[in-house]
Length: 546
Ligand code: PMP
Figure 1 (tube, rainbow, N blue to C red):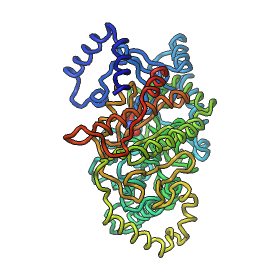
Figure 2: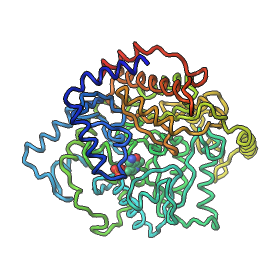
Figure 3: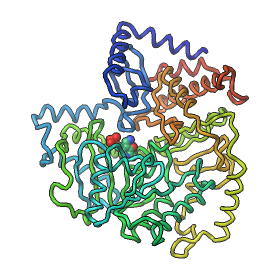
Figure 4: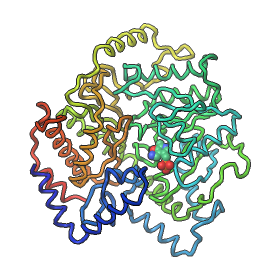
């Protein structure tokens, strides 16, 4: 195929002597590192230089990096303001490691961080510096609400991801644990109730209320509820704003602290500084990591001071005073704020999703395009499988009729529309073709076998093939989702329009290549929508960028 050959050519020409180094490092990595290694398996590259969106490998290959350190690099690699902030600390002779002692660098970080917080939290916030990973901050949040309420249980959601330490893991979707009660997270494409849209979100909210209010639900009054405003690892699923407000109301009414895990969604990623800002919700606790350290390790929780019932040392750890990370983080937070990069993410993300929906119209293997801001997911499905149509269809209609007949009251007897005033704007309506909530840069658009809540089966092998084809074309993407079938784009917020076009071009070519080659056991084009694309222009343009 034309594009493949041309990109191969570019890669091998620039490889030079680095190719042997590259191969040697990869060989030693697979011989010496743990079987649990993750990204390194799907992305066999050896980064040696990076700037902005671009990574250069030891073999001279260049890549556009839409993984961004799993969403960490709000400003891309080695942004000048970040490097300058780090150099300034190094040159000043300040200590680099200070446990949790006070320093001017830390003081500046906290001032900048508090400046960005949702108004309801900014005036009465406390911050706890945690061990430098998101998962440790999640542990801290659980400890905090347990200490403050005297209760133990945690409410968490299907499909959640909160980290890899014991407590965070048990609150994540793949775990089974008695201390965590699992609630349905609303989603359009694979709605657990088969209805999607505002009705699906309403049913999810009602289930939550019923679990809390039914004395025989088997769930004790919990210490807190933790949620991601957009599920990232779960497959890029934005929570409708109305549902988020319902969760706020439900928890506030029952004195349950609400913990927003903004580890991945924070610092402008979703089109507002914090993802909860879209809904106007003020959580009691925010868990922050990734981008707040400006590419270096840093994690904190910020919480309402009323919860500060901790004893000294209740959450400790040696590495809570990384001065370089705080300086890099301050520079990043300030740069995102001053340059209105959240607005930029909303606007560009919206445009990219629009273009991806066009692509979804061309290729049967793209079932859904969704996201918020520059947190974008493309769900890959089996192109030739039948959508799960009949049973779910009747369930859908029956459930909808039931809701309509009830007038969808909230727990106080008000109408759903009052409880979730803009639910329809965000969620769109059931059965409306490319149905999904497309409002204000967020949303989802089921295109193939999903427009009426009947998605085709997930296609993890196809998604992995698309990831591989992207890499061959110099594009790094992540895979996520329940079935590892969602291609994820998390570009830096500084990505230019031209780079965004190059990213989408490379992705389109990769999908095209996979669509044409994929049929289990055969090697023939896949369906009439596989399309015959023009490759030359696309590849040429992509190679000039980055
Ligand atoms: N919460 C969320 C929402 C995340 O996306 C992640 C990491 N992907 C974590 C927590 C855990 O962060 P870390 O990997 O730094 O422990």
